[in-house]
Amino acid sequence: NLFSVKFHFLESNFLLSLIIFLIVIGNINSAIITGSRIILAMSNDKLFFKSISKIHPIYNSPRNAILLLCFFSIIIILFISKESNILN
Picture 1: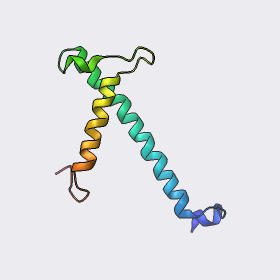
Picture 2: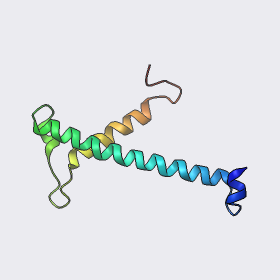
Picture 3: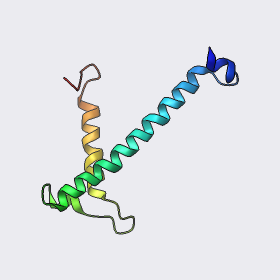
């Protein structure tokens, strides 16, 4: 195995799992950041609920939009089975 030869001190499965983990965390981070900004813009344009457009006073982040996105993500994780194909 190529990974075992170059990185003999690490197990190749561990290295591959670590790479996949970092990619997934990066994708989740970018999805939450961009998704909350889109929801905030919709709320500011009065296309979504006005209460979502509140900005955190210290961090200047759209706190309600982030909370809404996290809540919606948890609902999707809990109620969509792993066997179902979301795209169909």
